[in-house]
View 1 (cartoon, one colour):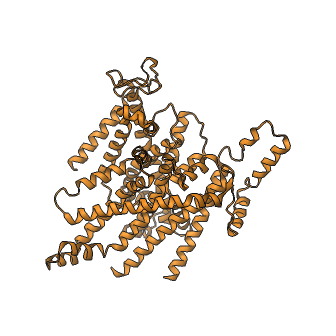
View 2 (cartoon, rainbow over the protein chains, first blue to last red):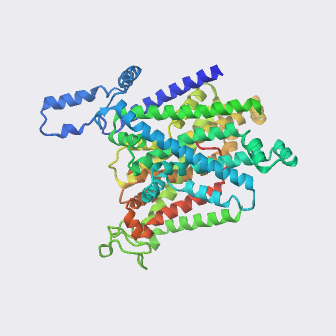
View 3 (cartoon, chains in turn purple, yellow):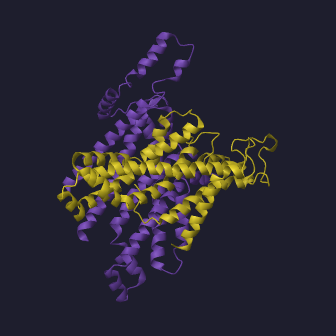
Length: 286
Length: 268
């Protein structure tokens, strides 16, 4: 177990750092990198313009920038955002809680709706009982996240519920397949034959054994929610990490984009690894 | 094939034919009727006109053409890249396999839309409309390879250890011939499935990108670009026909998903 954990941790760190390097390289190679709108100010003399260029000269060499960035990171310094004129640490501290809160509500809501509908569909098993949930999940899967955000904006509600609507169809489909398969297993048939109540069969013999896989869904939902949070935060003008990432990309703000890339990669990798561990723990018992 | 799937095929066929025949059944998407600005639906303009006097119905048809023809092209590109990288990684193994697997992990560690948005924002934004279309869908094709490549790699590894390939290898068939003649044809069902799974994903991604102002540029229409009109809530309330692009997008993506009947696990 400890070996698996160390291996996963190493993989997570390496992938996140590679993600940061990839982000930095893309920004550096992007057209318009290194230009500063302050240089267009006619009031500045050549010395001032030279000083502005020198400020950004350290970012021209990607390898040097990244090595310096990692050295700063080791000391807790995440750099300075040129576009927002603020330290990256302050920006992340300010915006991360809002996104985390939205993600928590969104994932919890999405998992609750998806799982609830899957349980009802599987337990009820009446003809046509899955029509409404299937239609609802199909509809939500076919609508872009940004349009869902617009709908919620019209209704005057927050983006977190839009995230829930993006997450729920994936959870519903996966959970329904999982629970349907669990219902057909021999021990469930035996429990039903012995006359156990439907609720007990569902909770103790279907849902409980499938709990690790169901927990894994919650983990993977975070990745989906993170992806959806970008258009949702932009459309609903919510000052979170998604909106910050959008601004960083548009402004070609290298330090900000590298930090956000590493942060998002780290979060999704950690959550996916937890989901993998939940499934790995399940396997020997099968 | 169920009745619902037959209906989905009929809807998709009708939408595709209508979009291809846009030149015959509607005026140009950029023609501006200055005497009919923001006009309601009429016999001349079935979906009314926008604030520049452009026929919404014509723009919807041309936008459908852009989204419906270029999304499969992007899906084809991403499937080809996935086949090449995933196939060779699964077949050759060793360092190349580890390198490709690391690349897949790296691409999948970032949410799809974040990756797409970050890379698109780094490309030139003030391009011509045609260049913006090509850039958007080229990017979708080039960045969407990771998820299919993972499945192709797993499929190839299973096939590589199959009896018939072992026998072919024992008979001295050259590795390149083994790959092209024996492995790739057997990967076709996996590749076809990945292609069809990618199409609706790319249509939705283009819509999200265009809504964020990073997709297809005006005056060229696309579903995503037309959805930007929905940001004006009061105008939508007064002119509900402005919802037509959203309705068509949902209908087409639903039909595609219905045909797929995907029982896949969660996309990462």
